[in-house]
Amino acid sequence: MEIRSEVLGNITVRREYSQSDDQQFAQAGKLLRDNRLDLFTADGAKRSLELMDEWFQAHRSVPVSVESIFRAVEERKQEFTWLSPAATNWYKAAEQNPQLANDLANHLAGHGQPGRLANGGDPLFENLLGLFKELHSRRESATPQNIANAQNRIMNRPGPRLQFVAQPRRTEPISPAAKNDDGRAFFTDGLTKQRDGSLGKSPAQYKAEADAAREAANPQPTEREKLSAEDKQWRRMAEEACNFGTHGSQQAIRETFDRAVGSGMSWRKVFEECNQVVAMYRRSAQISGNFR
Image 1 (cartoon, rainbow, N blue to C red):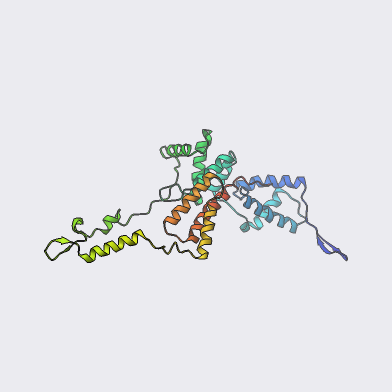
Image 2 (image 1 turned 90 degrees about the vertical axis):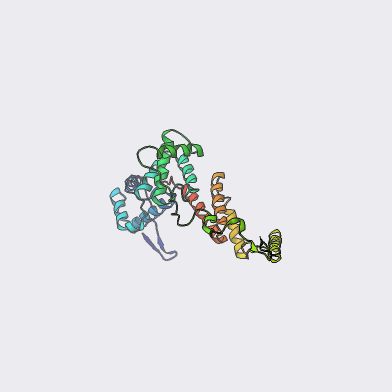
């Protein structure tokens, strides 16, 4: 509604919702959740309410009802966030025990490497739901030992299994020694034939070895150690990310940090890897979003 005033100008008055309207929203919300509308996470619920409010502000004469709410959603269906069946099943189950659900989400945030539990997309929600049902049915908390036992039970009985990240297919020899083997006998490797016909090392070879040993004792800074101002900033941000959340989450982020540094990633990439884990922990705190 727009009020025209010579003193204040044009004033738009927002439509206010009554207690009866709130009851209609709540009733429609239960039905929409069953149809996989994201009313579970904080961001999803906020987005849905904003879109519905925009529709009813633009249609002031339409009373709030379950039918009109469904109409509002249908007209702007592509703008709402919809969940997969796996995600919906997980969020519904998580409402039974939010603490256990959050603990499991934190635990799986440290996985995702080859040979470990998958922690992305629908495989993440399926793994969370499988572990949640196993622990919740036994009234067990999400300790590392309880999770390991639950995982073992699930994987050794008929029914849905947990999903793991596949190991990369090996296309090279297993060890560096096997890969670099050129067929020469190791006990003569590095030796050359001397003037007297024996095998040994020349003075020049001994000098080269001495020079190499001296350099090893006094190493020069590597390129990675010669950090630019920008790299120092990325490193500081990555190290600060390791202090996010609880002790358990910090340990998982630190493992990601160490793994990224060990693989030779740039400091910017190290921060991005750590920040992905931080973002997962933040999302896990939103699993019990409310709809009003």
